Image 1 (cartoon, helix red, strand yellow):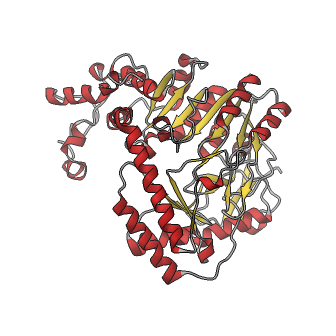
Image 2: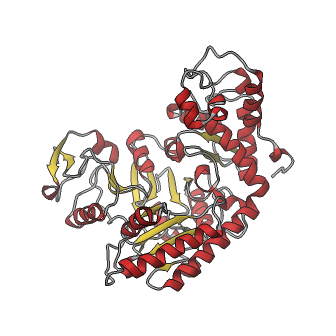
Amino acid sequence: MNLKEQNRAPIYEAVEHFRKQHVVPFDVPGHKRGRGNPELVNFLGQQCVGVDVNSMKPLDNLCHPVSVIKDAEELAADAFGAAHSFFMVGGTTSAVQAMVLSACKAGDKIILPRNVHKSAINALILCGATPVYIDPKVDKELGIPLSMEAEDVKAAMEANPDAKAVLVNNPTYYGICSDLRTIVNLAHEHNMLALVDEAHGTHFYFSDKLPVSAMEAGADMASVSMHKSGGSLTQSSLLLLGPRMDHGYVSQIVNLTQTTSASYLLMGSLDISRRNLALHGKASFEKVAEMAQYARNEINAIGGYYAYGKELINGSSVFDFDVTKLVVLTHKIGLAGIEVYDLLRDEYDIQMEFGDISNLLAYISIGDSIQDIERLVGALADIERLYAKPAKNFFTAEYISPEVAVTPQKAFYSAKEPLALDKCIGRIVGESVMCYPPGIPILAPGEVITQDILEYIKFAKEKGCSMQGMESDDLSYLNVLSEY
């Protein structure tokens, strides 16, 4: 990484220079630097609306960058050790979908874990690829799926030698990491592309004390949520390419779905955040890891909870662990993670990242402090004292291994009919059902609805999980395929 060059922020500098020129705007956006919408100025501030501008020659264009955006993307590639990077203003969803669409066409096979984010399954709907799912092993005590094991990936590759790519979640929402180097090497040995959904792994690139990053492991493409642990604005992400990828072709794929009206607020935040990480990321993420470990120690001292860490590593299904993740098992105090999540928000004004059936996740980042951690620990101690119930076992993971009957695309576009939930057993679902976050489908289009899956859905809804993906607002029915 060229640290001298990393001091630059081309988009930010160009927008700041433009702002000082006081150019008369006869272009979009229509609020005209806020003059046409004073309420928006009051909400966001003049500094913000004043740089909410349209693409123009001095500011380049994200669809075909040739100047400041091109420079900023090259600096990001250098900072992340990639051959090329794309600024993505549609979130990491758009980056994941660009990876899948770049690797696969209709009818192609792609190997991936079933506990993928909905964006990957939606990409299969868009391109018509056929999933070859690997069901990761489950830690039944923690109620979480683990990583794909290299041996399972190898077996899937040998059984499907015509597959075009393998997609890896690394890390998972819970901080679980795969043997990424081995999986990438296996992919290349089998003439497949190695794609990594690295939404929760921005920080891996800036610390030698954290698990290996996708680019360091030799992956062909990686989607990185800069807005999660990297500090940029929500919805801003990066798509990283390795040297084997055709940058021109991927650019065309990106432009199939990427907006032609890219936000300079989002792109500028990517530019500034990349500079900050390149210059200060190592020290920042060491501090984050220390705070997360302090929190684990303090929470485990309360009793009842279990904040887990590197002790889970077993060299296979948990090859490594992201120590910046603070995940807390709650069911031993008789409460679902989502119930503790609701209590923290409603009674203690603490907003967690998510609560699922068994766990609670706090996203620790460069913006947190020890004082924030202590407030969380105190609230959890209060909840254990005031609300704990006899310990109970909940479901063992955030999804139940499904039976795939037809491809996601075929199911999504097939004729469907609505059926009351209890009448759906044995039918093939034509839509997704998931708790969000984390956005991992309990059911995805083309899967068979079973009694166990229905019970899980009902339990998650009863406990207060945010249910998404289906047409029904109240989950009173599901759309199932008519002809099956």
